[in-house]
Length: 155
Image 1: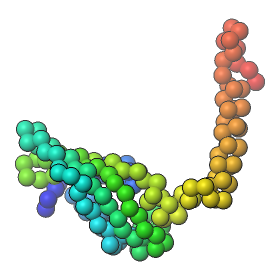
Image 2: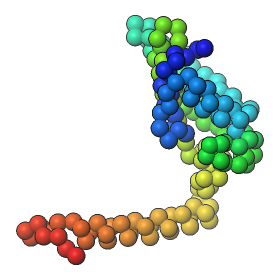
Image 3: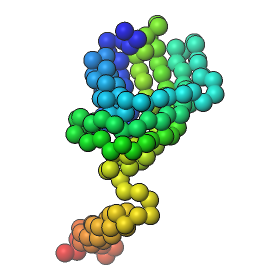
Image 4: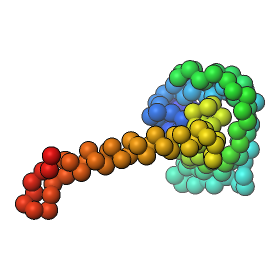
């Protein structure tokens, strides 16, 4: 009811923006199912630009992953998340027509077990695997890159 029927929502947790009030509702339900104690609080006063029906808000959030996030199928971990972010809003009359949120997704990815803790063994193993892949990619790209002498391709 607070959004236009064709509201556009962009969030780092989404693989791509979603459009429509039903899609936004489902995204929010999924978030609160995974983090039922999720609490947002403003940091400072909101910025409102009335002549263009736009606004922005810096916020803090905290919550505990007590439920699943499905899709894609993440199981609850019990990990706490806290952080800051910013929302950008565009209104059509008194209803939200576009919503973009910006925040660091890495604490959320750690809470659901996708990213390892910084400095830990899992991070070191991940770095080793990434470096192996990067070395292979560099060698593959070097074989297909034109040479300085006449533009011939090596390989």
